[in-house]
Length: 222
Ligand code: DX5
Ligand code: ZN
Image 1: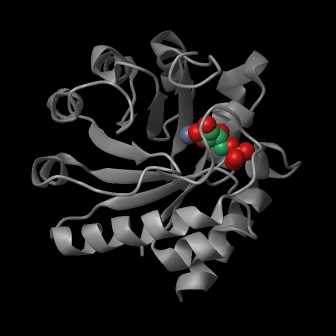
Image 2: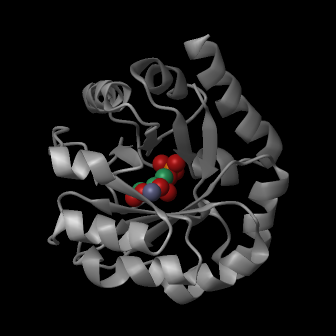
């Protein structure tokens, strides 16, 4: 399995986001995860397209934008134009899912769908043909530093089963409460992309923190 580590800049210092992005890059990250919140879909407000545009100049890492917003169909293209390489949208948000995914792909980015912990994994044939990756939330979105919800492992397994049968390479990403301790269960269930905020930016040595999560995932699937 192609294991990737995606530090979530939400846990970084917002006073120096450019440097925080660089720290992830030199620390060995594969992607930079960017949590976009609108104060409607989730009770918090974070980052908009202009900040993504600025981050684009600070790092060569693929930018993985996770849109926790209502009406992502209106804004997803803005994030691609700002420099996001991957954009994921929640299946629970009000929007025409297929059309939103198409708009992301048409602009040349990878598109993903996200499931909250209480949304059982299901996927239509049409959406299945479009998606490049599936993000399973292991906390309720809105804030970093929450505890991993073990029940979501069923969603990870179902998403991995779908990915294996799809005939294409679909990443299964997991986000929320990821630490070296929770990573093995997620990896064993089929996740291959690990988003971590506090377990990376909250540690004094980012390289070591990334390595610890990577080793935990590799060990669990070897
Ligand atoms: C939660 C965000 C996560 C968050 C993860 O709404 O989607 O990406 O930053 O933070 P930790 O790793 O601290 O749970
Ligand atoms: Zn996220």
